[in-house]
Length: 177
Image: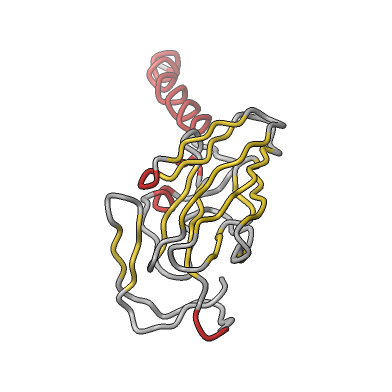
């Protein structure tokens, strides 16, 4: 009787161990962080690596394992910005903006240049096509008017277009995040 019970419990034990071994993700990002919808004040990524104004027309973006730094790139509405991409990670990464037809692969240690356009309003999401599901996303955003440097907003309604743009219909003001 003990042998039969042991034989019947063995498949259950194997199943439990298999499930436990598959669930770990060291990045700790949640699946809803990669839906592509962002509201004002959020990047949509598992970790925020800052906001930087590139109003001068150019700047450097670090691609690392598995984030962008800065996570939010700010510029003037409609401004063209030249980004120097530097892959400082250990694996190949990518910088993509679907609505602007930007899709640049970089092997570990490589650098390259891309040109992007800041949206006239709202935000545009950029992402690593290989690691988007792990939260490797960021956004292009317009600099806040009036020099406000608040730390978020109360924008409650947001919508995401198929081109990666996000607009907020909430009544809040946005600043640097």
